[in-house]
Length: 146
Image 1 (spheres, rainbow, N blue to C red):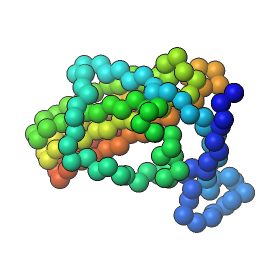
Image 2 (image 1 turned 120 degrees about the vertical axis):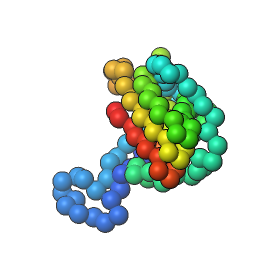
Image 3 (image 1 turned 45 degrees about the horizontal axis):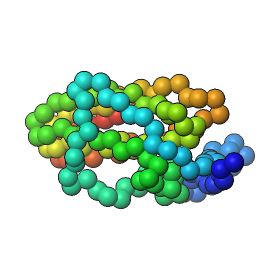
Image 4 (image 1 turned 180 degrees about the horizontal axis):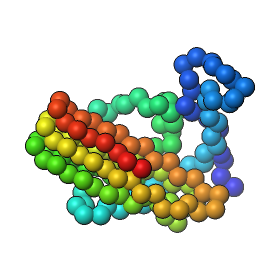
């Protein structure tokens, strides 16, 4: 059986109402494989330039291990200056019980980009981690809907 690592994610900067169990979340995770990400029209897996390499997320740096390059499906979409783009993604575990993916969406100045993420039903006792990173330049509009 694969070794599972335990980590705390979503830690609040200060303890509040600890008896409710809202200060953090404990997660057990084993190394997995890339998930499946399929795009409906317009399909895209764009090369994005200027995207920040390191981004802080609400889940914390501890979760970076979930998105190691060898076990993560990377998918990206971008909208060029003045362009309006809408993309719908279908995301699923695939054949693996543990899988992960990372979606990067970037909008240039004056562009509009909307990404809809549709998650397929998970396998019994399966785990799926997906990180969505949005990067919008000045006067751009971008968003992700799950």
